[in-house]
Length: 494
Ligand SMILES: [Zn+2]
Image (tube, rainbow, N blue to C red; front, side, top):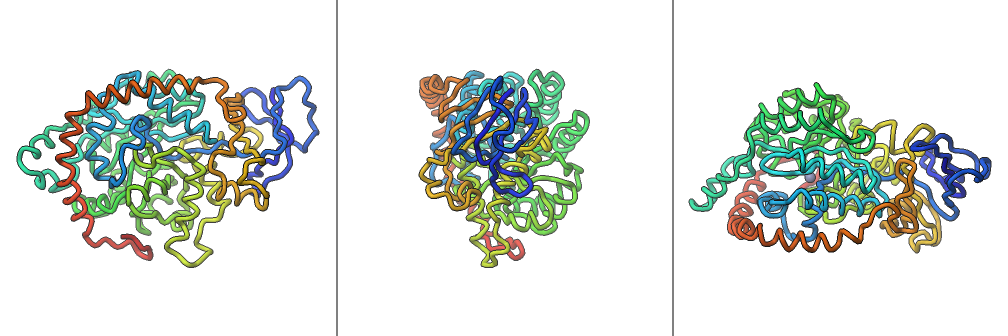
């Protein structure tokens, strides 16, 4: 039994902070009561005096393999990032896969995030050992994850029409030699993985992650759809992240990516779009009508120059909105407070009508309840409410960004940068106290990370040199293709 008392607690109905105490039994909130009405005796006491109390934040989009490659890039578009994937996240040992995931899980926990949708990638195909290592890292650090092995049966060079031909002959051959596993093999690994899942699904649950529609054959997407229906697991895909993707969809399918996925029968309530920058009204209508979610990742979208998603249009049409950081290879931090601040700010860039801007309660809702729904945890996490899991974050009102305290919700969304996170409770366990990990040795990861990065630099040096040779051709071809006029109604994009 635990009592979190003396704090100002976010009311999920009003999205206002009110004095209240939270009673926890085992992993759940069993009551939220008037301050001082439940005695401390006989209970583990968490003193929330001088704290704001919010639900654990939920990161809607992430990639565990990228935590060892944070900070490696500067002026990369999404396409340059994908062209460099053969060295940035390749040739990892199982221990390095665990390490990369654990570093990210610790960063999220320290910054008040207690659950994430993770598209963990191994190419040419997912491995059972690799996915289990990532799941184990989340279980050991103690935060929740919906873990979707990221897969494709077309390489980057096969996926974009004309790209391989834009390379000079010796490089073209090397580009086309990059192959992913046949789709039946990837689906078989997932079937095996999901049916033998050994982790508590309330903490780490599996999902499917065919990465980008045109990087997957239709047969692969249909195979994933059928497996998802059979085993009742969620989905996440990168959809309309960059303008180039939207243009390639017209070339390949004669319609948008979302329309194509709809035709194939993939859209369903457990389906989460990552990004959704280049969507039109018809796309949003299809996603809303099927009960889908979108993880909006403004930091990644701005860093990679992908564009700015129209979150107001998503909400207005009834799409469930989540917020995410994206992986450390493209964002480059995993700070959900920054994601909230950016989501609020970018919603104001292209529209002078303040009614269309995201309000701070809408942003906070997307980073909690919206994310919970996107991860398949609706009704379990994302709210401080009786019956919900005890995933609770305490923010320190002594932090400079709360002095003075004028409007707590505005200040959590617009002022908090993660440095105010004092205590984090997940599943009724205190995992961070006074900003320090109580149950996991993060410091032990530092030396391991340095050793891993040195080893990977050596084993990936040839691939890195080859990618560097290809990069100017990829960049020139993709930016040329992205200059094709593509108009998303009512919305300013470059
Ligand atoms: Zn991503």
